[in-house]
Amino acid sequence: SMDVNAGSNFGGGISGGGGGFIADQAGGVPGFGTPISESQEKRRMNNRVQSLIPVTVAQMLKATEDQGDTYQISGRDVYQVAFVGVIRSVTESTAYTQYSVDDMTGPPISVRRWVDSDDNIKERNRRADCREDTYVRVIGHLRALQGVRYVMAINLQPIEDCNEITYHILEVIHSHLLQNKASSTPTVNRSFNNNNNNVMQTDDFAGQNEIKSLSGFQKQVYDCIGVSNVDQGISIKEISQRLRGISEYEIRNATEFLSKEGHIYSTIDDDHFKSTYM
Image 1 (cartoon, rainbow, N blue to C red):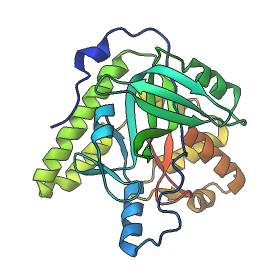
Image 2: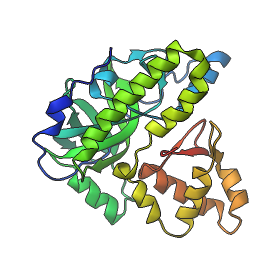
Image 3: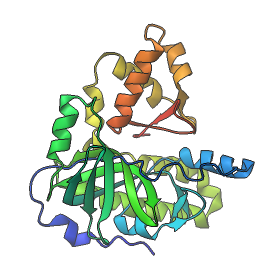
Image 4: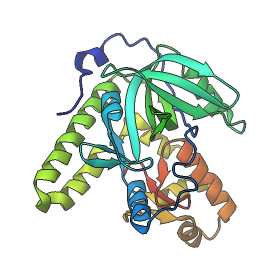
C-alpha cells in the first residue's frame, strides 16, 4: 500500500508565499574507507541514473534502506526525489539552512541547503522567500545521518500556484500505480519506463517555463542535455564537442547553474547530466 494521506489536508490553509529548496551534505560520504565490490559499484551507478521520483514524506520515512545511501520506494531504487510541503520552521547557520517541511502524510522531514556565498541576487531572494508557513517544492537526495533521514536539497522553490499541490499528489499516485503494474507485468517494463518518465515531468509548475527564459549559452547547454535519450545522459566532453564556440569552463558554469535551478541532474558521475523534465 502507499502512504498518500495528504488528500484534503494538502488543499487547505495555504498561507500565501512560496517556498524554497535545500541541499545538504552533512552525511558525508557513505562507506568512505571501505572497499567497494564491483557489484556494489555497478549498483551505485545504476541508482544514479534513476529519474526524478515524486514522493510523499511518509514514503521517504518508510523507504527500505539497502546498502550505503541506497533506498527503495515501492520496490524501486531511489536516487532523486521531489515532494511538496509547507515549511514549519527555518534554522540558519553559516554553513547551511535547515528547514522542517511538512506534507501532512507523516511527521515533518528535515531539508538542508548549503549556503553559497556566490549565490546571485535572484537566488538570495528566493532563499529569503523560504520562510515559515510557506508551501515549497523540494528536489533533492534522500539521506540519513545517525539514523535520522533528511533531504539534501538540490533546489527549493516557492509554490506560486495552489494547483501544483494537487498535481504533485496525482504524480505520486500515478507513479506508484505504474511501478506496481510494471512489477507484475515484466513484458511492459519498456513501456512503463517511457511512461514513467512522462509522469515525472514537473511541467510548467516546476519551472519548465523558466527554460524559455535562459539566456545565451545556458540555453544551448540545456538543449544539448535535453535531447539526450541515453540512461547516463550526456557528458561535459560531448557538450563541448557540439558547442565548439563555448569553452569547457563556461559549460561547467552553465551545468552548475542548471543543476542549482533543478533543470538538470548528474547521473553516473559529476560530468554526466540529464534533464529533469525527461
